[in-house]
Image 1 (cartoon, rainbow, N blue to C red):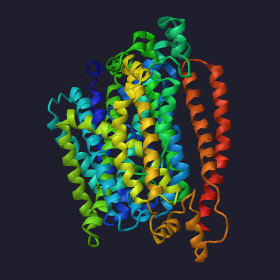
Image 2 (image 1 turned 180 degrees about the horizontal axis):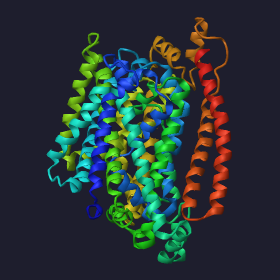
Image 3 (image 1 turned 90 degrees about the horizontal axis):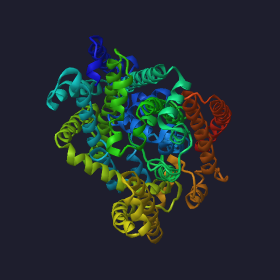
Image 4 (image 1 turned 120 degrees about the vertical axis):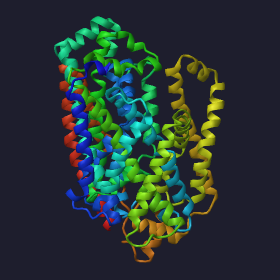
Length: 608
């Protein structure tokens, strides 16, 4: 138990962290020279932020109260190859978004992701804009703010002796709301940076504590082999995914990568806010790269110490999903040094607070920009920020409701988020194919959930499918991934058919969108119309999609090799570490060269 290792200094560390976060949040806008009476200063930090700061914010926001138990639980049942869990989920997706779309999003000069539909389908089609904003807030933000508040209570209650959720909310929610209310995005970015450094520091303490307990990397590897035996120990210490592993097999890695990568970057939420706030196109492209590197460092340092737990408790390697949830708590109780509780709890609070503050800020922005403006009208000058702040309070109130009805609402939110993933491919299509229209969007949104649910009924009727589900909970989760892949393919066929059978958007709308966004892909008729009007130079459109995918692939190779280098070093596999490190360096040199050249081509193609 953490409370058994609690020293007098630990509550002080936690209190200092909270006070510094509050002060940095409150005075963040002043430190960065913002005028928070202006909407762009309040919500976009004056559009002059560096890529690394926004990347740190993206990484910190991605962590919530469930991340540490989840990833530590994955690590104990997969071993070193558990890093492929986050490599497959985020590796290519974040890089594709950064390289193919970040510059294009920033160049449009819009404030939020849903505003894109105003340009793509015309001002008359308000529904797509309003719908996407409301669903992102009510389904994608409110439940997770509520989950984060619950997480803060679960972390802080044993330390401070607080039993009531209401008391925790009365302490934490005003603190968060005050600095988000006061400083806007500038305060959120600065506190996210602080929270990111706290998370990295706390994770580094655990990484070192486990190595200290076993006398270094070689001692840790020997302990794992001795406890688990040659065959199981070899599987635990392998960086390659094991074909027979029920949790993370090569097939599930492929499914994760496909599901998450398809459509990546074509729609944005809070991550788009980070792109729009950047000071240049090149900095916008760097946001996703910085975010991925920092996020992977955080996640890897959460997972590597789990090797120490397997050295003492090899039975965790075959733990059920419910059993592996306790791996993180057991790891802390066995390896966390006395005096480290304060930093660890501060890191857990930081992970939750960064998520909540980001959702409060961006949620109020998109409601103001994409619901209030289309339905109510343009606010009077000077009132935009105040309307947004009041909408922020509304989001906070809804999130408090989730806290006291968590069992039902959170489960519903998870299901809804899953079924909406079936329309992911439409995102790329609306950018890369001029024929895509509002009717196709409606078909994608409506058919996606229906197809997903029907697949959930029909696919288990296949004998092989049913047999895989019956093997156990982990195998059943893998089949859910494959169900999502099948539903994605079927839904793509549906919205493509609707698109082809209906009229495209008005040519004037398409021409204005093309000039504003300069999309890649199949826009021949629109380009020819603009060339005929003298609004576009008579030259062939540059081929940018496949080269961009190639740049992303090299970046993925660089980052994956870096992750594998750190993983093998941790268990004393120095030859493998040297080979992976060399691959990382070579890929890094190539990536830097082709990344700079590609971003320059994107900028030129926009100006031409």
